[in-house]
Amino acid sequence: MKNLRASALTDKGVVRQNNEDAFFIDEERGIFIVADGMGGHNAGEVASSLAVTTIKDFLYKKGDIQDSKQIKKALVESIFSAHEEIKKKSEQENSLKGMGTTVVVSYLKDRTLHICSVGDSRGYLIRDKKIIKLTEDHSVVAELLKSGVINEEEAKLHPMKNVITQALGIGTPPIPFFVREQLRDDDLILLCTDGLTEMLTDEEILSTCLQKRNNISDMAKAFIDEANKKGGKDNVTVVL
Image 1 (tube, rainbow, N blue to C red):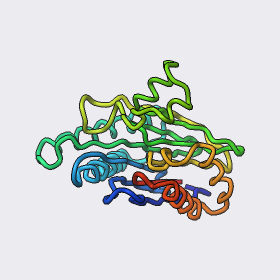
Image 2: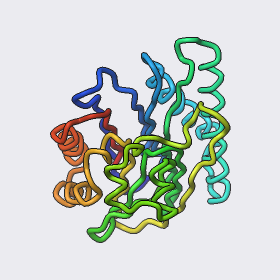
Image 3: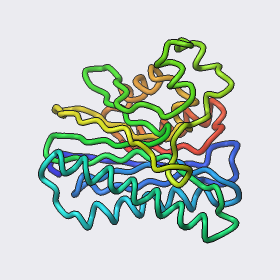
């Protein structure tokens, strides 16, 4: 895609032994995926890897999709397909029982960004020195915030802040969140796992974006470094 630059980085963080995140980028086709796996032993990394591969393969088979409605349909179907694949695999192997993963996938066609997500991995838009959260978390805290039971400050300290209400491979098929955004020159898109957003506030993310604006590879590294400096409690993955 003309004038598109992309960079991605993942790190296991300071606390975790394994990295259960996975990502995929294809600048030419405009496909970008981030997944954050969960489950015992290595099950989380199996789930996230399977999600990324299934979604990527599904979208590749669809070829070059032109129409925005068809792109949305393909993204939603790819996520359902990944959900079924993970569920099937977890039923076949005892060691993988109960595994699941979040996912955020974006499809960039011409100047239109399409994002589909399940769980609490996020998509952000940085434009005109402002940060805009494009996705909505599927989490207990997000639901409490939406209903006005708690405020933003209470959400940060809530004991259930890491509990998600939807994931691929677990329970009934998810209801993915979808958003479409018309892009402008100099827009920056960030896809990330909660290993970043649990460690850094949106304002801190924006500050790093503005400081490292001229080099997104440096920006990706700075995000990992800052999350780890703050404690690195989880795996961190960023796609820019």
